[in-house]
Length: 349
Ligand code: SF4
Image 1 (cartoon, rainbow, N blue to C red):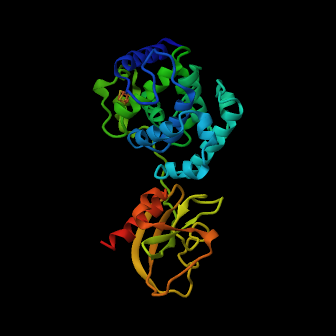
Image 2 (cartoon, protein in one colour):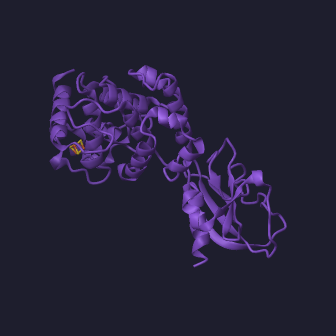
Image 3 (cartoon, rainbow, N blue to C red):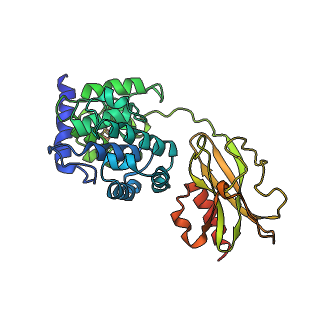
């Protein structure tokens, strides 16, 4: 490590000692590392989500399932329902698979980055973060915050995603051999509170002495790729209400929102043209308005159809269930269908 990279680590750790955020999954700077289960759980939850949004979920999960073995033994539908609202449901399924794999090892997480990487659903980032934070291993932890700080510190001109290689190499060069967990968390804190996406607070930054991007206009780093428009899909969801209950189905085991409880729909996740089949093909439907929702790879325009027939309808009992309207919030509907349900309920008021 050369002198300037050493100064960066030392300055950042000094700042972290005085400014670390207090978070329920963390240990204070310089103290023994937290329980790997809590580190892993928080890191999986925090992907694509804010600290503020994760807080209540983390508290609920750790109260209900205080150990990785408890989570591994939990009813999967219950875990999926508790996850509802955090989005990216494949992560919840991987969470369960990973908990089972760790429980099979006696409930002990492996302590190296390479072994962690081999667990279900642990990508390069999560494996590095858990190795550094829970096991104090030197690991190069690069999330979106760290990416931004490093791109600015070294004024990396290449656009993303191509710049990731250079960013990683620079992040590696400034990662110290001791206090790797504190260093990783310090970079995350700096990125979220000081070197922010807009209006970075360079005057308060412990790294301003070493920052090449500051003089060049920090906000232009990291250099963004040209944005391709997301494809637009259309679909329909169906609100069938009778006797104070609504008909909910369980989505299939693969594909979008797999395994989640949902309103019946026209199969938009497969075709996306809004012309799929209704659950009661001959019934009368009223237009209940539209819900817009952004998924990672497409935007969905979901038309809500309200059953307006006068006939009492029935479905095979293994196709779904009648859910009482006054307990709808306990159904664990994913955000898309929760929005559609809110729209339907608003029309009753
Ligand atoms: Fe970010 Fe400014 Fe600090 Fe550079 S000086 S790392 S741009 S906050």
